[in-house]
Length: 385
View 1 (spheres, one colour):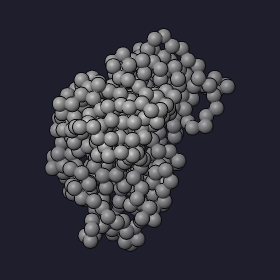
View 2 (cartoon, helix red, strand yellow):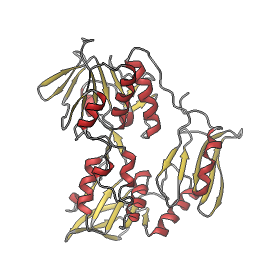
View 3 (cartoon, helix red, strand yellow):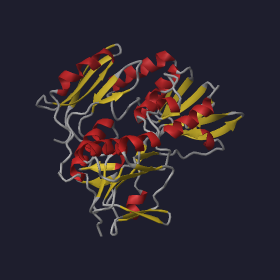
């Protein structure tokens, strides 16, 4: 039962939620909007979490505004440290415990959660995921005065944190069960160029084995690897991946797959319920990056204010923040047929993924070659025209 006089309710105050509300305010200055967040609601850029140690930035210094600042700036209500416990789509209400909050439009922008590793040992409480500003603040406090950090995972997040923390003065070792770093993003030659750059900074890699056990060892831990190696560290960062948050949607009967399923209007399977950002799956795509999020915020603001607008994803390259060897990559669509054509000179790699007809479907650039992204972008097809 829709209530057109009820506010828009946005669950989540990350980049997706705040950018949507900023776009909404351009189109509907007087629309009543309530944002609900389980954390403190500070406005910050999540990609900056993996630059904080190298720049010696505290969590407060990474934040761009408090919840109170954002509420005043955007003329909205923000409820912080508040968890939605139930969504009643039939009656257009969300519940905080027993308290109902009516909505006319509901937006699920609650992002993705860190995948927690499963392992034996009594040192699991020394394993940290850095998925938001509060995580970052807690981890900075834990490693204050410490030197040795073990990073689990050699994907985008793991490599960014490894580069950042070694720049921040830490001794860093990385463990990951893959043949080369950034396995879902880079071909072997490009990955080797980045790995060699990180090794030049002092990062030590253990590629192939898993961490099977973490035991306390005084103020630190010892990680046992599946190949028999032991790695001592003061703290462990788990960067083994993210997955869209789905539980509340599932309980509400909203269709999910890898993410919350949405059409190109970003509407879910339920009327007046929309989604965007890291929790959303749009036409089969879950894209945990900033550019799709920004495009979604612009399109959804128009839809919510009465002009149905399908989201489109153009060419959206991903920048990996490994400053020792810069990386820009535009992955080919899954199951694309083609082959890599690769030129490498030291840290500078230009890898082009082309089909039999010679059409460019994706690329990976490292080092000085990242400057060629503009020209290559002109050749690429849009992700979702």
